[in-house]
Image (tube, rainbow, N blue to C red; front, side, top):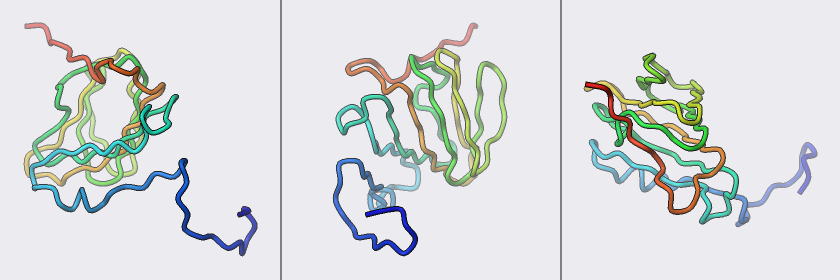
Length: 141
């Protein structure tokens, strides 16, 4: 296969190709958050991890405010989410790219009654095996 105009493309199975299981998303209960790992260390992602995440209205980061030992990027595919990064809060509509620097407290959530969000979460480098993905941060009393 080449990148030339008019080149014939056929469906193939390839170790570098990952496809979303849309049936799994369609089968979810309305209030069910779901993470589909598209690429991680178990599937060949030695340097990057990628997940597709559905967050229902009224829900958000399961850990609440948290940090990571890696940089994280969200791409909001659909819906509009609220985001807090290092104490600053803003809204991110579909089409937004959000960068969470390594070690900086952050969280995301959807308002009650809002649309669900669907976003890609990209972790660089891929989280180390056996390490927690997120480290909850306790806000001072």
